[in-house]
Length: 209
View 1 (tube, helix red, strand yellow):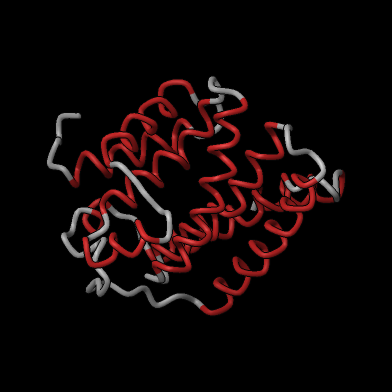
View 2 (spheres, rainbow, N blue to C red):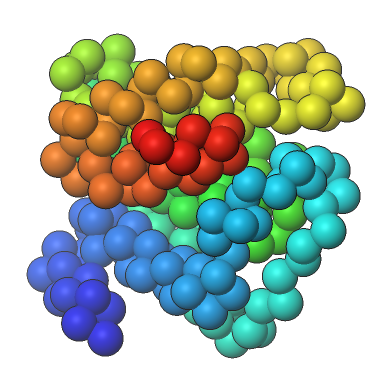
């Protein structure tokens, strides 16, 4: 409730800035995750997580899904317009990538829609890749690029060959390195990066780490 109220305050105060919209969509996304417990360690470490036909399929609350989708669509629209006029603004690129990140993670974790996730993830990745190129020390950009590289690098070959042809390439090792950078130096995404690393290490049975 508090998070929603703060996002709505930002929207009222800065209606053209995407920040309130992006994080309102994130709040709705977190609600869906908590309701479905969609990214538990147990589920993520299952061999079928990256398969084309995973055994798990979330049954989402229709109203909660609609709230997320509506907020995510507005966030993407606002972020695109904002970034178009500010191509060299790190904050604009970060928010654009974050807006698409919401959509990509939804499509993977709850919808099992890999092509839709790849499209949104690709846009998120390019925004944060451009941000990293603009400012190599902007560690918060490395969460998205790290997850992208790890996820694409983990795809089974039946999917990966198509992703390579479409220009989506990844590396598990590079993804892990970027997540470690985000965890160590990120100002906004450090906790998210640590959570992802915990899931990855559990999947790889590196329990001590």
